[in-house]
Image (cartoon, rainbow, N blue to C red; front, side, top):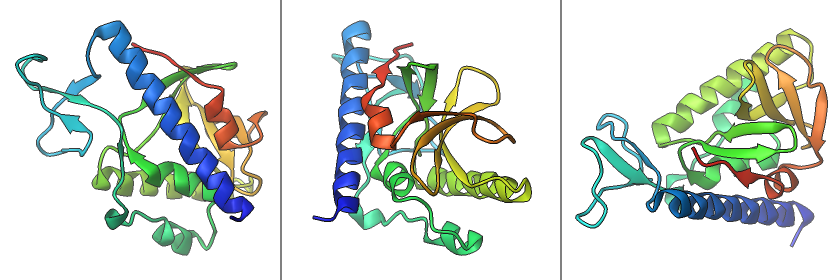
Length: 196
């Protein structure tokens, strides 16, 4: 197995572990899975409908992260082609591993929300946002980063340095100012769920 494959496997393992911790912590506090308002125009494989044992308020559904089927073939080929840039493997793995609502977490720097796609259309919207972010970086003559989390501080994001794969805090439109981890897998391994 190549070191790149091992790194991907480690990242997938950390994502799985954190999402399971998040759902377990939510169930321990609330006695049920997380719930979200159901939008029939915006369905997700994550949605689980209520039953008699677990009723929900009208219009809500339970949800949990769901591994994306290989048959869906989500990829960043179009983004890489449009930007003439190869995205870091960690970011591609992170955003194509599972569908989920945002997962809230705590790290040494404070609280944050890990961003994921809710469905395939949301993945396309995410790609557009990432293209916009990278084009802004190029215009500002800053090295490329790819955001994957937002913080509770306005305009402060957590991103991956596209060259090294290290994780940084940056203010939108500014250069990353603080490295907080050497890799995405390492960063996720240090998070603890925050249940709201």
